[in-house]
Structures are given as structure tokens and as C-alpha cells.
Image (cartoon, rainbow, N blue to C red; front, side, top):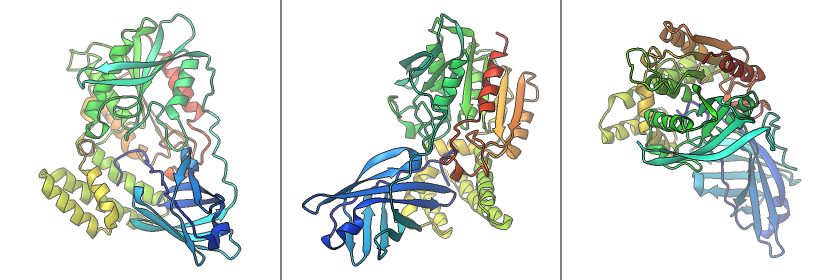
Amino acid sequence: MSRSLRVLIAIFVLVLGTVSAAHAQTAVGDWQGTLKAGAVSLRIAVHIAADANGQFSGTLDSLDQGARGIPLAAIVVGNSQLTFTVPAVSGSFTGKLSDDGNTIDGSWTQGASLPLVLTRGTSAPPVRRPQTPAKPYPYREEEITFPNPAAGITLAGTLTTPNGNGPFPAVILITGSGAQDRNESLLGHQPFLVLADYLTRHGIAVLRADDRGVGKSGGNFAAATSEDFATDVEAGLAFLQTRRDVDQRRIGLIGHSEGGLIAPMVAVRNNGARNNGAGNNAVRFIVLMAGPGVPGEDIIVEQVRQLALASGAPPEQADRNAGQQRSVLDLVKREQDAAALDRELRDRLTQLGMPSAQIDGQVKGLTSPWYRHFLAYDPAPVLAKVTCPVLAIDGEKDLQVPPAQNLPALRKALASNKAAQIEEIPGVNHLFQHAATGLPTEYASIEETIAPEVLEKISTWILGLRP
């Protein structure tokens, strides 16, 4: 039960310390293993060193997240056992050292207990990301800031513009759910950096910004909803309208996942939409990448079902999981009294077998302003008012915003918009990578960040629009 449409995975920050001398040599060195939690796998590497006084130090690498050199402290080794606790994430590890000192067979406990085997050896190299661009770029890049007066905050981002005088068509990239930086960084991938680079190389200016409260942007992310994020996008629009190098007749929005829910909100308010002539015509087109077509509650329930099926669960188990999820979400939608909701959620999650150590975090997420807004929000009425050109694409193997559920709803909502183009892209997942199963497990291990045909389709569609 995640707050996000995307998979948000915490880095396990291990805190290690001193080690008894008896087994010092077995603990020193490089260790690697894979932690598997449901549909998510994380390759980790632990590096332990000893100084002349027998004091030990080390670092942790989360290889699939591109996080390296995380400090370690407080290891206890004795009687062929290695144990350490992780206060930062309420976790702990207990393992048995093999006789040859090359393996630690153990378990990681963080609410639930998961097997974790560490093997001695040089850590595996990070997965290649061949699409990530390297400087110098063949275009201009500016670090910029712009205000959102309605929220009283300043947002920070990057504007890339093609070489030349312009004016150029321009887009604002809108991130998916969860606290995202301007590159929408995830598991070593930087999808918005790759997308911005491709579009700018093909003659389109691109503005991408850190979410409020993330990176260099001000504001409080935790207190915001999709409606608040829409005002941040409008602040970006106001910024682009000050630029002489931007063609004011060709400004659009590209939203991924939750961003595909926000883009229509902004378009309706800023494009003279049907039954609302008050817009300022700033938004001339929108691109929805895995944008929702049904209410958030329905997406989350179907997401649970699809992930279970793709992970090998029998249909009856997948249906049971989905039903349990629905019962929790119904409770969140129905109960308005905060204290009563907190109590009832804790009781319900306990009944479902959730470990007590995880319940606090789940309750906090389920009762957040964003989550409650997302559950109840139906994008269809707003989509029906969008009159500007729309390109809506979804991946055939998307298990987080499933195309079988959302594309028909998008087609229905956009039926009267003759400039709407709605497509399912074969073979790609929620991140628009070519994938085998579509499971989030694959995201980190796939070298590709965005399928080339998706990049080409978006660019060609935008450049083919008439001013």
C-alpha cells in the first residue's frame, strides 16, 4: 500500500561499529547480496575495513539506486555470528559466517523478516545507463528559479533551449507521485533528464523543476496535493511567458503518471477549455505518459491485483489482495474523524497481518492530504473539458497504471476532442522501458531509461502541431 503510483524504495542505511578481534578477519572486506521485498529487489554492497587498533568502519552501496559510500558503524561478530541493528530504519541483520569466511547467511528484519545472504567479493558495477547524456550538451542549459505567489514559495529548475535565436516550442515536464527531483530520478535512472535532452536536441525548449520541498525548491511537499502541484506548474507557465526565446503559441505540458493527472487540470484553467472561457491560452497541447483515466482508488486496487498476478500469485489470491486493499481505502474515504480513522486503520492493518513496526508509517501515508485527495479524485470530468491537442500514451506492460483499465476511460473522456491521440505502446512498462514482465523489480536492472520509439513519438507529435 504505497502512497505513490511509482515505486519509492528507501535506501537501507546500515549503521555499523566495533567488531571483536576473534573474527575480525572474516568481517573485513567487500560483501554483496540482494534484498528481495515482494516485487522489489535491491542489490547492496557492504565494505568493512579495520585500522591498526582493531576499530572497524565501513560503507554501504545501494547499487540499483546509485547511492554509494553510505557510512557504516556498530558491528558485533562472535561465535561465527554477525549482527547489527539499523536504528534509522528500525531494521536489523543477523547472519551466520561460513567456515571459509566467504558467506554470511542471514536475515534482514524490518517489520517482516527477509532472507539476505552476503557473499564476499568485489561489488558489482552499477547497471549501465547508456541514454543518460554527458556534458557538454549541444544546447543551452540554465539553472533558473521562479516564484509561485499563490503558495508563497520559489521553485528551482533547469531550462534547456536549442542553440539559435528561436523562438522555440517549449514544454514543462510534470513529475509522477512522490517527492521527485527535476530529473525524476529513480533507481539510477533519470527519465526527465533523458527526455529533456532528446527534446532539446530536436528543437524543443524544456523546463523541468524540483518538486516543492525537494532539492532546491521551497515549500512543504508533505502538506501538498495534486491541486497544489498544479499551481506550481502554472508558476512555470508564467515563467515561460517571460521568455523571448519561447514561442508563446507552442507551449505545452508533459506529465508522467500523477503528472498526467495534473496536466489536464492546468490545461483546463489555462487554455479556454470547454465551458470555461476564462483561460489565458498559455497551454496549447498536453502529453500524458501513463496518465490516469479513473479515480485513484480504482487505480490502486487494480495495481495490487496486477502486481500479484505478474508475481505469480493465483487469480484467487490476487483478487483477495485487491479486496483487502479496497477495504482499507474504503475506510480512508469514509471516516472523516482523524482520531477515529487512526484507530480503525490500526485495527484493520493488524487484522490483515501487517507487522506492528510498519503500521505507523502506513497510517501516516494513508491519512496524508495527498493520498486522500488522490483516492477521491476522478480525472474524467476535467479531461472532458480539455480542448487542446492531447497525446495520451500508456505502456502495454504497465502494472501501475494498467492500460486495460485506463486507456478506455481516457478514450471515453476525450471522445469529443478531435485533436486527441490515444495509444498503447507495445512491450513497455510504467517507465516506458522495454520490459519482460512490467514488474517494478525490473526497473533498476534494465539499462534503457525510455524506449527510443517513445522519445521519437513525443517529439514528432509536438513538432507536427500547428501554432
